[in-house]
Length: 113
Image 1 (tube, rainbow, N blue to C red):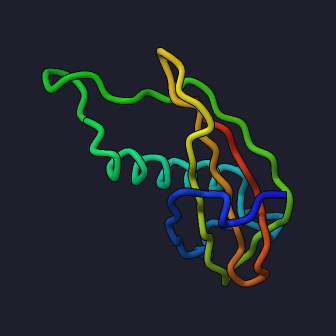
Image 2 (tube, one colour; image 1 turned 135 degrees about the vertical axis):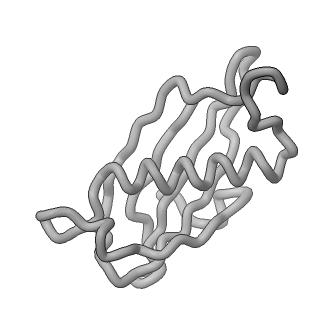
């Protein structure tokens, strides 16, 4: 199973009360939002051009998936790790892992291209 040490870069985000859904745990879409936050931070750390239009071409998300392992709830802190699994001529293959600080365990992971 993935651990935080598997990831090159991490960010820390609070689990907000309104991140939860009617089932009483963090909504599935929030994990993808957190992965996006980590991905943009990763690109910024790389010095990648994130502007579109006249300034050049920026990254575009073509695909993402998610595997949910453990339901997070408020209050907690999400620690999101990100790393590059591969570089193809037309895409990066990235992986993120979302970890619960409160329970010291992985909650979800995702792949993006």
